[in-house]
Structure formats: C-alpha cells, structure tokens
Length: 305
Ligand SMILES: N[C@@H](CCC(=O)N[C@@H](CS)C(=O)NCC(=O)O)C(=O)O
Image 1 (cartoon, rainbow, N blue to C red):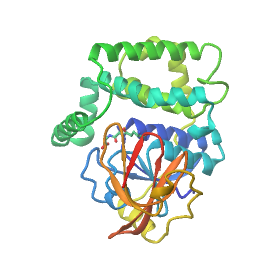
Image 2 (tube, rainbow, N blue to C red):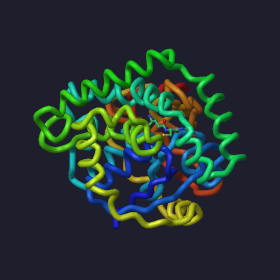
Image 3 (spheres, helix red, strand yellow):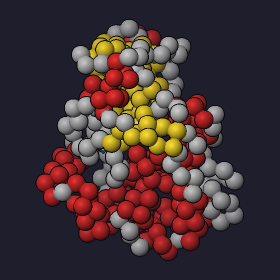
Image 4 (cartoon, rainbow, N blue to C red):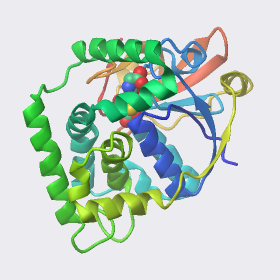
C-alpha cells in the first residue's frame, strides 16, 4: 500500500483525473471522501484554507492541485510521464490549455437534467441547492477569461475535433503510452460523456475508444479511511525534508500566503520553506495536527508576504 491518501469526491473531474492516474500507475491508495463544497472542517487542518479538490496527503505533507499530486504519483510509481515537467513543452502547453479553458467549457456546457438528477440522488435537494449557490459565488470571484455559452460549445467541438485527429494513428494523444497530457484531457470529457451523458462525445469514435482505453487501467487499489484517521496520520508524522530552493530567495523563511490565480483563490498562510521552478512549499503549525507542509505548483499560484 502506498502512503498516498486522496481527499476527493465522486463528481469532481480533477479527482477523476487523479483516480485515473492512480489506475495507470497501478498504486494502492487510501481514500477520504469529502463534501462537494466548503465547509470541510476535517480537511481544513490539512488544506489550511486551500478550497479546491482534490488534495493528496502523504504523512504530514499535503499536495494541493493535481499537478503537485501527479508529481507524487510519478515518483511513487516510477512513471515520470505523469509529472507535467517531465513532458515535452508541446504537452505542457496542451495541459495549460485543457486544464483551464477547455475544462471550464466542458463543465459549463455539460450541465443538464441527467447531471442534476445524479447529484440530487447522491446528495439530496438541500445540498444540491447549496452547491449551485456555492459555484455561482465561486464563479463571481474568479479571474478567468469569460466565454459565452455559444463560444464554449464551439470550444468543446474544436477540442474534440483536435483530439480525434491526434488519435488518428496512435492509441494515446502523444504516442503509444499515456502521459500527463492524456489525463488532463480525460477528466473533462469523462464529465461530459459519463456523468452528464452528453451526446456530443459520441460522435467522435477515436475519442470514445481512447476514453475507454484510459478507463481500462482502472483506478488502482482503493481503501476507504475516515477523515479522522487521515488527521491522525498527519499528527503522527512530520513533514519530509525539503528540496533545494532557487527561487524567491528573499521570501524563504518568511511568513507568506499562497493562492491560486484563477478561481477558488482562497490563500493558505505559512512559512515558505522551499521554492523552485516546480513547487513552493510552506510549513504551518496547525492546532489539530501540528506541523504540516503544503506543496503548491509554482505555476498558476501567487505568493505574497
Ligand atoms: N487546478 C486545480 C483545479 C481543481 C478544481 O478545479 N477542482 C474543482 C473540483 S473538480 C473544485 O475544487 N471545485 C470547488 C470545490 O470542490 O470546492 C487542480 O489541478 O487540482
């Protein structure tokens, strides 16, 4: 069993990205299911204010954002292609686009009765109402490029056309085996095809076969644990040694806040202990779990003293 604990929920596309990576990586992992929106009082001591899901935990180290999580899965499984920075620049550029603009276009245009019914069945009417309100509020505070519904539908179709041609002569987007780019493109289309059961993906046979191929890897070997157990694991560990820093020299050892720059921009505060091209790490002393380290990708996050 790897020590990786994933804090996630069923309907979260980015959680599905990580579950699929864990399947490809063939890892055993521990699962803590969380609510679809804050407050999440049993995750807060670990996430420290970061509101996005999923979050991964290894002992007292907490990985915020699927890029930071992908790097850990790559390390644990010895599959370097799951870490974005190990992929060619062309793939990294593709990931930047599909993990934000294409993701938002897929999610927003997927909304339909089928999806609402599924969330209603899973969570009940009150939670569904709160969830819709939460997402409207989160959207109103976001700093992302606004596209009209018509533009977003065209973006989804153009994206599907592009994937269909990328898959013309190969089983995965960039060759014979998947890499981080495949998983970044996978989760938004899983939401469209498998959750919302939107028909648009059905018109793309190669994309459908590729989604099936990724799903055939499974989701690794999952064991449920309680949020209290995850907290106890953090409490009984100390953060691991940090890597060399070659960025933010003036901020190392200082009290800083780190926040995503796009949406869900709630900051996490702590002492900056490492900063390099891939990640920034802060250490926090939490009243419930003691010292924990939060890892964030350097790209897509801002740091403030
Ligand atoms: N860049 C983030 C995006 C994560 C994200 O947008 N997650 C969505 C769920 S799929 C989220 O946090 N929604 C708000 C929430 O669940 O509170 C990552 O790669 O992890």
